[in-house]
Amino acid sequence: MKILPSDNSYSTFCDLTSGYRMFFVLREALRSGIIDRVAEGNCTPDGLAESCGLRTEEGRRFIELLLNVGLLEQYDGQLFLSRFAATWLDSASPLNQRHVLAFEELLMENWGQLGTVLTEGQGALIRERPQDEYQRRLTLFQHAMGEAAQVRARELWQALPGLPESGLIIDIGAGDGSYLREFLEQHPGWQAMACDLPDVCAAAESLPATNNLLWHPINILEPEALARLVEQQRGAASIVLLSNLIHCYSPAENRALLEQLQELPSEEGLLIVHDFFRDANGFGALYDLHMLVNTWNGRCYSLAETAKLLQESGFAHQSVLELPSRSLAMVAARTTPYRAASSLFSLKSHALSHGFFAAVELDPAGIRSEAWVRAKCSYGCSQFGRRWSCPPHSMDQAGFEELLGCYSRALLVAGQPPLRGFQERLLELEKEAFLSGFGKALVFSGGPCCWCDACPEERCAFPEKRRPSLESCGCDVFALAEAAGIKVAPLRSSDDFVQYIGLLLID
Picture 1 (cartoon, rainbow, N blue to C red):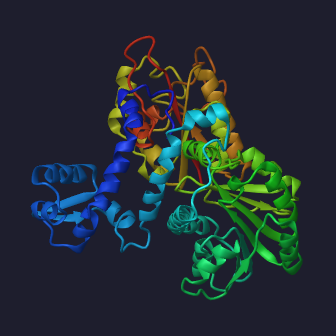
Picture 2: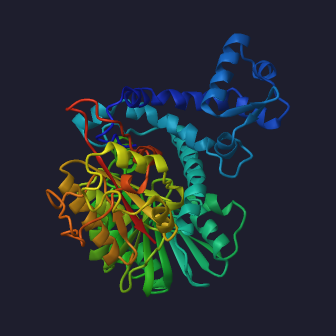
Picture 3: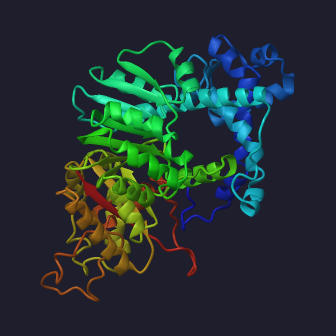
């Protein structure tokens, strides 16, 4: 998460300071057997507490909490798993994340000593463990990563449409092969090669076999072993995948790795770096601290650092795909850049780096125009009839709704005063979208047009800059911003936080 400049609420403070409580609620819901028992069916609150060995009063209160937060649901006295719990916690779900939850608990001890790392340096908490303990933690880690990969692999490959019917994909650091298995489900005409350490490959080969999937045991940090792989597959790969890999290594190690791997893809082939990036979102920044606390030299790289590494390896073109679970994929090519129509990440990044503090993708179909909003313009605003961007000169409610139907995507942005600077940045964002291939790009402003101190009576003096405000078209900006997760509130005093909301329509 990111605390927006407009958010100084105590509720956000409480959410931050008490977030760990929900982890222990999730853990106990599993550990007590509640999730499994409810999944079996025919379960009442009193019967659930008794069958799980809970005291009557304490169990009742815990079950009420699970109902309140949405992990359980109750109909006609019977308990059921919510859709959320059935997806992520039920052992019968192919997407269940039970090992992820168990592994996260192992990390808490080191997170509690973050200050030690900051004063003594990365690696200060890393210590050698007895072999049996090391093996237990390694096994849990591998299971947890496999569960997470079930989700992220589907997101990644769904974000890369238009691939040819056949080719070779090589996964460097393949783990249990989840990414390749999902890829082959969607692209059965391809061949796949999974590369990882010998013991990882041996464990993965014990899983059910997958057609067209070949395992290649290798330590990629041994230059000679990697050179042999490159010699065997030079120029053969249509896709080389590095998923959750570069964050394990130092810049020098990654540079050496990419210098050799760049020979694997064909001239038109893609190299995909799928990872968390510390400057992309709050989750990526937190993951960078996770590497700081729990590894010797792991780190999350910035997008610019990763792009530079790829450019130095001969991949001059990069496109960035933002995935729903907050990881990103940098798709690199030597010649022609890969264009993913579904990605608005570059526009969002442009907005955030050019003065807007929030940029949220929206579906235009969810934007509503209300008659009362335009009525308040007509009867509650001193600018009515005085600005060419305001009623009655601006687009009416029906025209706005018709226009929204011409677009499939939108970007809602938030910025701060001065208003003229905000509107200038909106026009720059519209231009950037147009130059990026979105020919229908059009922005709507917040607040009245400010290009003139007073509009000429006969015609607008700056028609090329004039854009209607959202309010003038009947849009309830407060509701729209809140739906996008941007906190807004009426100004009650002169020192309240002032923000403006704008909209970019694209297709």
